[in-house]
Length: 114
Image (cartoon, rainbow, N blue to C red):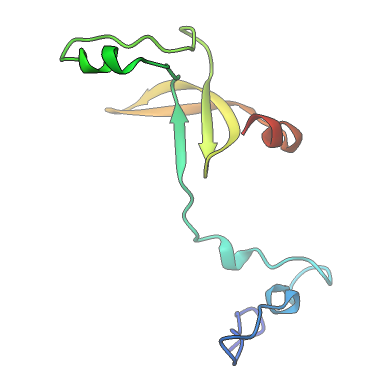
Protein backbone atom coordinates (compact mmCIF):
# COMPACT_ATOMS: atom_id res chain seq x y z
CA UNK A 1 0.00 0.00 0.00
CA UNK A 2 1.17 3.54 -0.63
CA UNK A 3 1.51 6.13 2.13
CA UNK A 4 -1.89 7.69 1.34
CA UNK A 5 -3.90 4.49 1.78
CA UNK A 6 -5.79 3.55 4.89
CA UNK A 7 -4.36 0.64 6.84
CA UNK A 8 -7.13 -0.93 8.93
CA UNK A 9 -6.17 -2.25 12.35
CA UNK A 10 -4.81 -5.79 12.21
CA UNK A 11 -6.92 -6.65 15.23
CA UNK A 12 -10.61 -5.99 14.38
CA UNK A 13 -11.31 -5.22 18.04
CA UNK A 14 -8.58 -2.59 18.15
CA UNK A 15 -9.93 0.99 18.10
CA UNK A 16 -9.10 3.29 15.22
CA UNK A 17 -6.30 5.66 16.14
CA UNK A 18 -6.03 9.29 15.05
CA UNK A 19 -2.66 8.50 13.49
CA UNK A 20 -4.26 6.01 11.11
CA UNK A 21 -6.34 8.74 9.43
CA UNK A 22 -3.64 11.41 9.19
CA UNK A 23 -2.36 12.34 5.77
CA UNK A 24 1.27 12.18 4.78
CA UNK A 25 0.51 15.03 2.36
CA UNK A 26 0.14 18.51 3.78
CA UNK A 27 1.11 19.81 7.19
CA UNK A 28 1.81 17.34 10.00
CA UNK A 29 -1.28 16.62 12.07
CA UNK A 30 -3.68 17.62 9.27
CA UNK A 31 -6.69 15.28 9.03
CA UNK A 32 -6.82 13.03 5.98
CA UNK A 33 -10.20 13.86 4.51
CA UNK A 34 -9.72 12.28 1.09
CA UNK A 35 -10.76 8.90 2.47
CA UNK A 36 -14.24 10.34 3.18
CA UNK A 37 -14.85 12.13 -0.11
CA UNK A 38 -16.90 9.29 -1.64
CA UNK A 39 -19.19 8.88 1.40
CA UNK A 40 -22.77 9.69 0.39
CA UNK A 41 -24.80 12.01 2.62
CA UNK A 42 -28.57 12.43 2.73
CA UNK A 43 -29.44 15.86 1.28
CA UNK A 44 -33.02 17.13 1.53
CA UNK A 45 -34.62 20.39 0.59
CA UNK A 46 -37.53 21.46 2.76
CA UNK A 47 -40.26 23.48 1.11
CA UNK A 48 -42.13 23.96 4.37
CA UNK A 49 -43.99 22.24 7.17
CA UNK A 50 -47.53 21.94 8.40
CA UNK A 51 -49.11 20.64 11.57
CA UNK A 52 -52.32 18.92 10.55
CA UNK A 53 -54.95 17.26 12.75
CA UNK A 54 -55.63 13.59 11.99
CA UNK A 55 -59.20 14.47 11.00
CA UNK A 56 -57.91 16.80 8.27
CA UNK A 57 -55.45 14.16 7.00
CA UNK A 58 -58.27 11.65 6.73
CA UNK A 59 -60.08 14.10 4.45
CA UNK A 60 -57.12 14.53 2.07
CA UNK A 61 -57.82 13.46 -1.49
CA UNK A 62 -56.59 14.30 -4.98
CA UNK A 63 -56.72 18.05 -5.41
CA UNK A 64 -56.53 18.79 -1.66
CA UNK A 65 -54.24 21.64 -0.66
CA UNK A 66 -52.10 21.58 2.49
CA UNK A 67 -50.88 25.05 3.44
CA UNK A 68 -47.26 25.19 4.58
CA UNK A 69 -45.60 27.51 7.07
CA UNK A 70 -43.28 29.19 4.54
CA UNK A 71 -44.34 32.22 2.54
CA UNK A 72 -44.11 32.22 -1.25
CA UNK A 73 -40.64 33.41 -2.23
CA UNK A 74 -39.09 32.49 1.12
CA UNK A 75 -35.81 30.57 0.88
CA UNK A 76 -35.90 26.77 1.12
CA UNK A 77 -33.92 24.94 3.79
CA UNK A 78 -31.14 22.62 2.58
CA UNK A 79 -30.58 19.87 5.12
CA UNK A 80 -27.63 17.43 5.15
CA UNK A 81 -28.14 14.42 7.39
CA UNK A 82 -30.90 16.31 9.20
CA UNK A 83 -28.84 19.47 9.84
CA UNK A 84 -29.47 22.84 8.25
CA UNK A 85 -26.46 23.77 6.10
CA UNK A 86 -27.81 26.25 3.56
CA UNK A 87 -30.82 28.09 2.20
CA UNK A 88 -31.71 28.56 -1.43
CA UNK A 89 -34.35 29.15 -4.05
CA UNK A 90 -36.11 26.61 -6.21
CA UNK A 91 -35.10 26.56 -9.88
CA UNK A 92 -35.82 24.25 -12.79
CA UNK A 93 -32.95 22.59 -14.65
CA UNK A 94 -34.23 20.78 -17.72
CA UNK A 95 -37.25 18.88 -16.45
CA UNK A 96 -36.09 18.63 -12.81
CA UNK A 97 -36.27 20.83 -9.76
CA UNK A 98 -33.01 22.08 -8.27
CA UNK A 99 -31.89 24.55 -5.61
CA UNK A 100 -29.71 27.59 -6.16
CA UNK A 101 -27.78 28.13 -2.92
CA UNK A 102 -28.23 31.71 -1.71
CA UNK A 103 -26.92 31.45 1.85
CA UNK A 104 -24.59 28.98 3.55
CA UNK A 105 -25.48 28.71 7.22
CA UNK A 106 -22.51 29.29 9.51
CA UNK A 107 -21.49 26.58 11.96
CA UNK A 108 -22.79 28.47 15.03
CA UNK A 109 -26.29 28.75 13.52
CA UNK A 110 -26.27 25.13 12.38
CA UNK A 111 -26.03 24.01 16.00
CA UNK A 112 -29.12 26.02 16.98
CA UNK A 113 -31.20 25.80 13.76
CA UNK A 114 -30.57 22.15 12.85
